[in-house]
Image 1 (cartoon, rainbow, N blue to C red):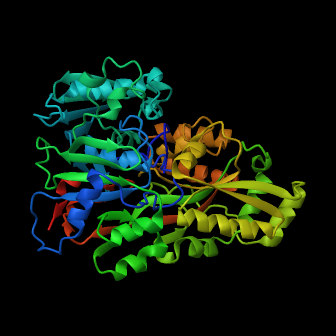
Image 2 (image 1 turned 90 degrees about the horizontal axis):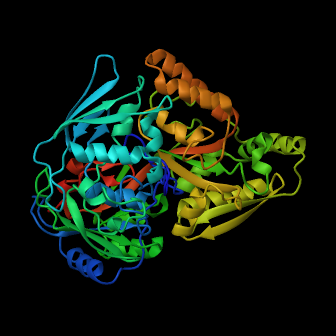
Image 3 (image 1 turned 90 degrees about the vertical axis):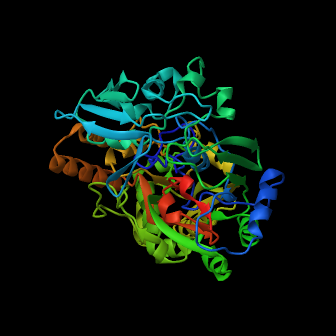
Length: 549
């Protein structure tokens, strides 16, 4: 997933997929793991709810939900949130303008969105009577303020690049209290995916803050979502309580607690004991949790690519060489790797393109480097590489990352490359992964969810992309992304992005592993799952629909 202070997953909150996004670049599709029980409010509530027998399937009001997350949120402000935990919490705290599912819009704060005939102006109508959690009205002023602050370079929002089209900013203009016009400097077919990322922030809270990202107002956020901030104890839990004024109707649950924990095995035990109600599962743990009979096991596609990132700027200098990147690919067997990492092909499909199958113009018919040890050795010899040493960073407790890193270590040893594994806690791992100046690692397992439009991926693969963690650079790829972002003809746009996929694959910019499925365990005592909509990155698109049976 895309992580802190980087461009978020586009088209899912998102992403982009997302945002992602980023975060989005955690190492697997199970980024939120939990650990031993938290103390205080979260633990007490969890124990109370976890001990009750299964009830009838009818919805009732009241009760709480305990959802496991891997770490503390980085920031509770949607203009900056890029890690999975922050995005998950923000989805309940802040309402989006609209979301897109299977090509169809679901409106939230917005009531309609229309594009002018010349495709240069979007007119958005907001629902009437919207309010923030503190009772203040939510109007077009807040939407314009949010976009203006995203565009303000001094505010350092990673979303800014999405609102710059052809080198010029999008203009957000208030027409009246419930109407906003968004004026594009040129035709931009991917802009709807950008708007999906917008979760308005309150002007009356932030208008006098010189640095919104660092503002203390983020520590007790005021949003417009189904649940409002109640309590946060660092390292233990964060609790949200029902917002009765939610425009979508009063939520069923009294509260949602995000239990912060890191040890997967202890978390699974807490899940089985009823102390946790919802948790991501590693594929290896599915059979154990399923055997209890107390959980719905819900695998679903997030439109996610799991991949091995090559740090082209690493101190070793080895991964700046295309031949070395190709050799690493040839040393590996993608089918074996998927089996090792995901236990079953049911949870992962082999990947070759950097675009996921849900994205416009995606094709897996691109060059690939895979399963040819002799070719790997030949390439290393041609590159003059002998007795190479690479450093592979891993998020501690992440079973998929650990499995992949051990497999890569073994396979690269066979071609003369020594791989040193460096296990780090989730927070340190995320900081290292997203540090643009980090040169002290070579390899890392990443993942991203970017949404349905290929333009969002420019942040990952253009030379100045805000989430170009690999530091990959190819002027031809840069030019293709620039062309694609402004091309209104679908056939021409398809050709552009297919060429971009081919070039990135030829360069072995990353090693795509698999298009993965996320697996979530949900306590059978909870209903409304279908209505809440299982969503990439954040689990539930609309948690107001969840209820205790």
